[in-house]
Amino acid sequence: MSHIVVVGAGQAGASLVAKLRNEGFDGAITLIGEETAPPYQRPPLSKAYLLGDMELERLYLRPESYYADQSISLRLGAHVSAIDPAAKTLTVDAETLSYDELALTTGSTPRRLPAAIGGALDGVYVVRGLTDVDAMEPEFGEGKRVLIIGGGYIGLEAAAVAAKKGLNVTLVEMADRILQRVASPETSDYFRTLHTAHGVNILEGTGLKRLIGDTRVTGAELSDGTTLEIDFALVGVGIAPATALAEAAGLTLDNGIMTDAHGRTSDAHIWAAGDCASFPYRDGRIRLESVPNAIDQAEIVAQNMLGKAVEYTAKPWFWSDQYDVKLQIAGLNTGYDRVVTRKGEKDGAVSFWYYGGQTLLAVDAANDPRAYMIGKRLIEAGKSPAPEVVANPATELKSLMSA
Image 1 (cartoon, rainbow, N blue to C red):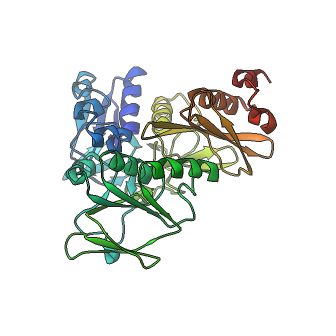
Image 2: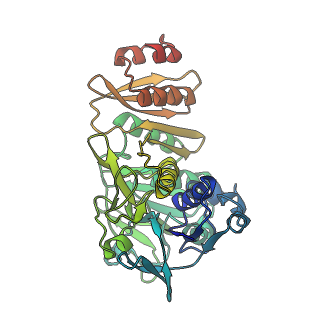
């Protein structure tokens, strides 16, 4: 009987093993995770779960009993220290495990502040796993002073939770504007206005020089010379693909673990999916950090491990929840040179349409699910309505599909 091993028990890993069984694979499956909790959703961690609006069990992707019911060996709290591709074995704690096919769904790790500038002080947190959020939750008391370092989506979502819980929130972003790496100035302006209205103090073009404290953080010195007194700090300065295991095994890396269109790495019997994997996209190569990509890519890999030879065609989409705003993003805005703003039908609804020349690349839709759905369908169909038509409030969104 063949044995498929999956290393990484997050969204991609859980989706991959479920798809293997759904496709009729009746061999042995082992899913290995470093965390002690069964596979769970990560997006609600920094939002509904931290707010206390979601119970732990509701985070789980499937009931823990599912894995035993499907004859999937779920090994939690287990550390894989090495892979031997030639022998087709891996070292799990002190045990050597053989595999016929191996999938790496190791995800990503948050970038931390260097210890030299206070990154190792108590009271300094990153938002990534369940243990991170459980550790920081007691800090979220009304009136506490929190410094959030980084104005990307992770930092802004944390700021929204902190503000809703009555904390005094300061957010610093070294770039000229929040969301600069991922969104247009129009989207940045929208979220700056939203957060300012909820009392968040956003400092753009301002970096962190160092955190202050003996064993626990008590303050922060900023790049403009300002010193803040704080009770704790949250670091949201991006994530990096978890590639150490793959690199040590001699697999080729290229912005993550390099895979082909089928999800196969440079070793014929090792595959990769999710945040850790890069793959061919149009004329280049990308790596996507999103739940939809983790699911879709993992399910394609599962099919290909069973000999299907299906190519993965990414259809990028993302979302972010902040206060009562749901931002939905369709497409990738890389290379845009024009943004069209369109007001939605409901109060406060707005969408930003990214164009490269006359080609529609992406849509950011805030509380405007209709604009998001139409934009997503247009992008996936390769259709690009004229920017002037989209900008015209008299244009019916639905009519864009037949244009």
